[in-house]
Length: 411
Image (cartoon, rainbow, N blue to C red; front, side, top):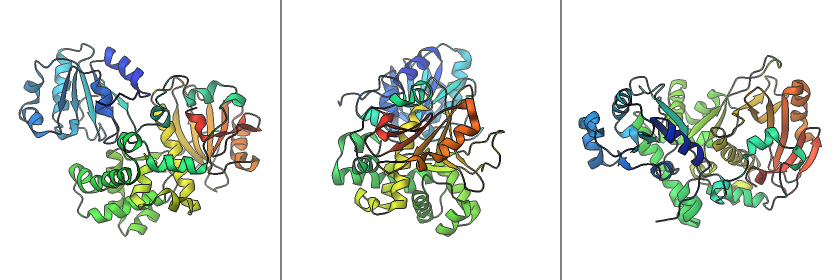
């Protein structure tokens, strides 16, 4: 058996499982949920295996009885009725540490299959971050450092360049290609992932009449990834109507492979757009959907920027649910397009940090101008601004604004 690779969520997962009767770990397929949650379970039931699922389909209440706890119910969505059985079991006995649910679809899919409000606490799990790949999850998280640290000491000198970051982005954070597969084998695994997402996972969740249209929609999302794009632009590119495009987007969100980062709103700043910024949750999915390698992406400046932005977002995303600063993320764009900030982090208590992301190795003050504007507009609410770049140095770009290597996130 391969050695377990520590995850950023390990500590909070252990604490929650020890104090709550039921915990749900949700995330895209093949991101390591079962491996991580299984370490806390006495019994593991794989509901994606017909023989193990049969009893739960017949009578989930009876099937749960007598199992040694904690019980891990893996891929719960294969037998949605198990959620009701867990709820009824907890109503009768609310001891801590009874059930862990893992699944690769959104847990609150609809009211009929989600009776767990107030009984089951959710914890998202994503692909491996570079910090997890390196095997070091100790120390302060980047988002907590962004709020609390002296900006001048935010990060050490980086050792990566643009080509290195792009290779990491194309490889992505799914454990199989990130840790065990290289070259053509890793590429084939990711191609297969996208194919199964379109031809198996999506139709299993919602009837998809034309998988080729869904494939083109995923490609359109990849081309426009990490961007604010009009819905009409997407569905015109694919040749579908608005209703179909909305259904496809919701389907991919339900499968936890697409996230829409909302536009930030503030009563101190007028004319901010509420349009979301769409991300495929792993940069490797962008490359696989478009069937491009790092060399091809490097020749396309627009796609290069989007790939680096998506990669950075994937490093920050796992921290959102575990950082002590209780952050939420947004993007900022005004309706005139004069001011844009790639990611805006709002911490508990209302303080705000801005993050700009660039493929440049030596950003200058022009790259920080929107962060400086935000600092001047927010005053005391502004915690920090950072321009994450592909070069090696950390340096100041203004008061409370620095440039820092992307590796600062995990260094």
